[in-house]
Image 1: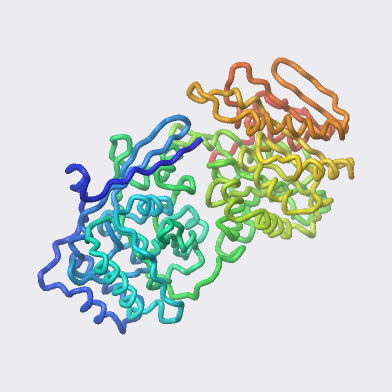
Image 2: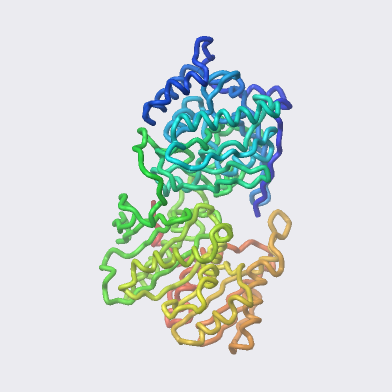
Length: 597
């Protein structure tokens, strides 16, 4: 379980050691232009020339004094029972040119925002950091939108909004240098940037009730900057548990990323723009692109495989892995597996690899790639294609709360339609929070289609509800003897993390699985195999299976169930090849198939 807290400190009430955090910029010259003078000078320039002028002024130190003293924001989180305490440092207001008496808040493209941040040893905030700043800000200004028009990207409208914000301050006698927010959207960094190249991420513009006008959005090209955009500088260095770290280091660490990010780890905490972006109209990211490696299969360097990367709406990234030894149009039957990733894991970690001491441990806990290769070697009359499903929140339950079940169906159809001519048998599967993708699909269809041949929950059926799913699943199973449902779970409500339980008796997979079994009891005749280690229940000639791991030692077996041939079993359960060359919860049978990189 993860918990997040934010502790506010007004800039004027901070201990002297924290007050020393200042902008690493040259002193402002007494002859430097005021904000009004500068705005007038750049009014007729094209966007690139305009931002080059802003960069030049910033490099010379033409920055107000009140922006030079950074404000601390202290946050805490708990990861796997370990508490972390951190403080990061932000500019008290959005970037501006000029003096305290006459400054000009300057909207910028992502390229120039990143360049200025790097010039001053800073970075840009994440969505969570923006929320944390808002929660403790001493000055919360009400947003003042200007009706959209082609002029919203021009200096006169920039200046109009700048004057509106200054009048808000003057009318309420609000001090410069106090942590201020609410008057601009933030240009932010996001885990979604890596799958949305050439885009800018914006978020915020909080109303006085704390709700942002602008959700996280990556629909604009990186060349876009309008009057509503603000650039909040964040110092690269911060304190974590009393140790100095960089923001990038924290965002890359799964145990610490929650301090700064609500999207999981962020491995690209910057805009990788080497030149000023070409102007392009705002647009939604297409479902697929013609960039290298996206929307088309690329041969891999090992195991005779090919992969295709799809970048879909709502921050969804899909990697499709298929054998490269034969055309996908072959007459062999095809199984198309939709694998919902567990919370906090990337596609690459889910595929797995041989790890070294410097590798993240997530690469060595599922090995779906190696388990798939084991299956391909065994099922020589079948083509197995796996679609790994990741989202920018690194959590399918959280993603569904934002986008709904219909969006799950849209993702499914965009992937499935690429293989429609092959008439694949669909397999719905996933581990942990990945089961939420499966339930999102089930909720979005009135009846489970004939093309779905297998559904597997690898310790992932948290979202099962009797009213929504019992009859739908039961009817689907009864309509054909070529349909399979497998449920893996363990006694998780007694498992201990740092001496404490962490799921309820009804909310964990043990409770959900027993509810499913109870719901199915009147509909199916079960046989059972009960031992001190397992409660196993079978029906429909083993096409329906509940494999429930006992847990007298109160251990955590969550991902162990996957690692110990769980995915293999869920693909073979109920067939003549069940337990052929492997044993569920036995030693991994796929080690020879683990890729080196």
